[in-house]
Structure formats: C-alpha cells, structure tokens
Image 1 (cartoon, rainbow, N blue to C red):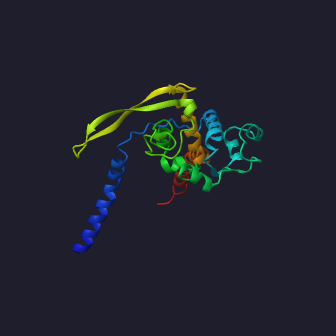
Image 2 (spheres, one colour; image 1 turned 180 degrees about the horizontal axis):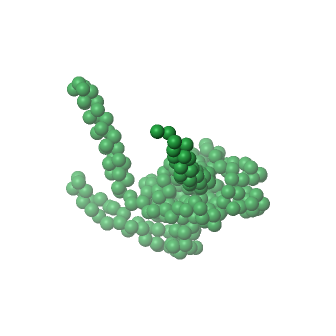
Image 3 (tube, rainbow, N blue to C red; image 1 turned 90 degrees about the vertical axis):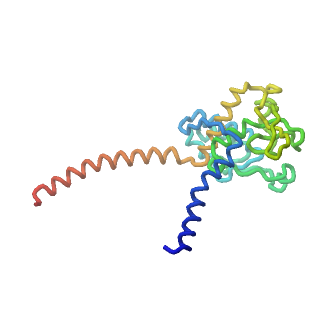
Length: 251
C-alpha cells in the first residue's frame, strides 16, 4: 500500500471512528429522559391519538397518515368519525391542517413541521423531553423557551395542562473567565390543570402515538418476523432429519 493510500485509509478511519464521539459531545449538554414507548399498548395509543388531534393537529400536519389507519389501534371508523375527525370530512383523508404554510411562517417565524415521522427523525426520547421542558422566557416573542430546543418558535400549547415552569439558574465561570448563567432545573411557578405526574403520563401517551404513527406496520411486522423465525427453526429440524434419511445409504 502506497503512502497516499495509507493517508486516505487513515483519514477515513478517523472520520468514521470520530462520528459517534462528535454526536455524543453535541448532545451532552441536555440529558434526554427515556420515553416510555410501548406501541402494543392500544389504550395508550388511543389516548395519544386524542391528544394529537386536539392539540397538535391545529398547526402540525401528518400528511402521510390517514385517519382510517387508527383502526389498527382498536378504534372503529364510527369512533374515529365521532371523536377524532375535526379537520377532515371523511375518515379516509390524510391528517392535513387548514393553516397555510405562508401564514404559519409569518406568525411563528417558520412553518410547523409535519409530524408523521417526527420520532423517527428526532427520536422518541427527544420529543418526550422537549414537550416537558418548556419554560417562561419573556425575551422570546411567544413568551416561551425550551431546554432541548433553545429559542424555539413554537409556543407551549399544553401550558394550561402542565402549568408554568420557570428556570432555576446558577452562575458559573466559563473558559473565557466571564460569568455565565446556566439553567440548573425547572421549577413549577404556576400549577396547571394537571399534576406534573399526570402531565408526564399524557405526554408519554402522545409520544407513544407519534412513535406508532411513524411506522404503523411495525408491530405487525415484528409479529410476522417472530412467526417466520419460529417456522424456519421448526423447518430446520425437519429438513435436517429428512436430509439424514435421504443420505443414509449413501457412502
């Protein structure tokens, strides 16, 4: 191998091996809480669907999801039509919103993203932590900021349920020798309609639904995969003894 080839290989190894450490360092500032995701819990998914339709679907779309797909989580079309069909006329329609992207950008500074695959993009733990760490910040246009997404443009639409959190800060000396304010934790300044534990449970249901919505066929795919593996395991035993029987008299 020539010196040039060695340098190329060495550079690629540094790049590949360095990627995980770079990602870890970038995400080390905010500790993400573990989202209690269980896509086999249909009651949780149904509660999460109700929260999504009532609070998220006013601004965020789910353009790759049809209402009728919620029959997979135990709902009938009649239940979907009576309880969840606020932004469409027929259960077969996709989850779109009436708000135009141009208006959304003017009001919020950026158009709210589509949420069909948000947990696959950001991760369930990120979304779970994000929805629970809004805090009051009068310097922001909406009056809200977020620990996970600093200077977020989205207002805290669930504040009536969670209440108002305020940051508890302490001063540290940075590498530049100057004092900096660091948020140590969030404290409840104004209670909401729910206790913090009840609100966390509501967010857990919502994130569970968002995770299911990102890949509705996952549960069925996993069940099919297990069945296929069991079949192949059984077939292997049958094939093994069948092969021994066929080759018994061959020397």
